[in-house]
Length: 267
Length: 321
Image (cartoon, rainbow over all chains, first blue to last red; front, side, top):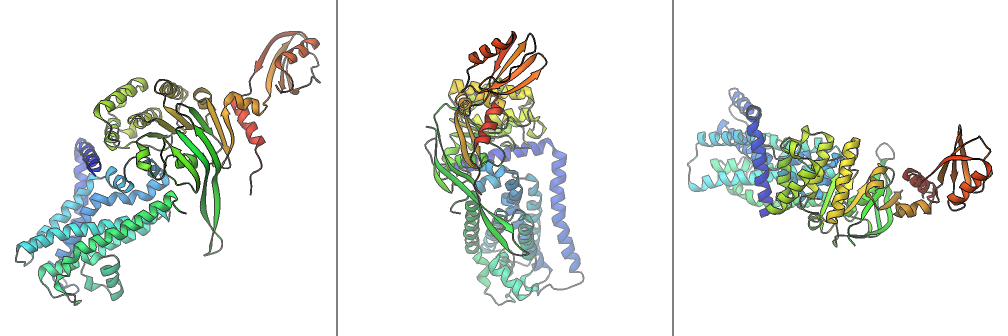
């Protein structure tokens, strides 16, 4: 673990130096990522000039949900987003080169190709969450602060688990990246809006199979103290850590199975 | 023994379209019943046509793939179970894929590898300085890897594989695509490494000059089986490859009918006679030729390594369906 952290620090340092030697290009990349994210907020704001509520929620609640989703996605994308390159690494054989190094495959995959430009999305996501939380009519007691912090981390962990599980598909299907993208980006899109706007099947899928509802919907409902239109109790927002842990276990299992299959254990 | 392989076998399941929706599965044997040992300090060339099972063997030796059956020990470890531990004792160079970070300067890649392999600062400096000097890296240490020429990159790859001072260096087609000068430079560096440090070298290649100049021992594989394994000189004898006697004659003469000669090619006054050393010695042949014509000059040639390998393929048992 200490090793991995030192390698992490090393790679961050190297990447930062590269970024700083191409400052302008780095600034454009970061800004580009941030603008992409912020545009969607503008769309939501415009939408609410025509409608008064979305799935039973007003603009503050919807923006808060969007903020949770964006911040968590940004964090997950920065830390484990590199797994999306897996199909490419398998095809080019670079994955084999990783297997002859004395580190675990997943840490290497996440660490070694870390992209600093992804910070753009992370920063804009945190900004959206911050502004939305600030504008929401919330009585800021310590437990609500804790809830926001906790949910940002657990949400990011849930997203990360979904990324890893989805990318494991590439070990079975050579062109698995499209399917993986459908799950990861699709999951993000789902998590960005109130669960109530989807039909029952999608809702169940999001709440229990891909636990996207625990990233944004339940935290928002709990934070605002709204009675859940779907009838679940208010403390559901606090279940994040449990769901995150379960997601990690499932994703870890899928990943292990996939890697074992790739290396040919027991086949 | 730095490598011990016994009864190694690896099969892959290949799925094929068998109808509109149905798929059928087929077992393909990539490596079967391969056994060999490599003592410390050996230089072993591993050759065979594409798809013969070379890379699959290498992947099992380095712990990337798990064998279907058989026993493998490398540096005393079980590669697939003790992959990370083995990684610290093993250097691997892939000619066609990089170990380096594409967009970082070469030196940054080395520093990252130093951290990954937990190489001490003193050892790191020593190894780096040594490689920098012998491989001439100084002029491009701070150049991003993507801007390096192939020859420069390969020198970087070799250095990257040696920073942690491995006992065994595995090279998978290290000279592919390199120009003659770069090849020569790489070979002399590797030969030197083997001589001074006793690093065991295992290399796969299609360039037989690599074998001739670097390897004491040759292993030929085809269709997943070892066809031959031994010193080059011994293999030459075992396949009974023809040698060639080239004579320049004073006057044209009829040289047909000499026992042991398998082919005669005349090229003006110069005649090439291919003969089997097992049936006639070079001296006997020269005497026989001299009895028929006056010889102005002569030379005796060894079978080339290509010839030896071609013969080994010709002698192989028919592959099983």
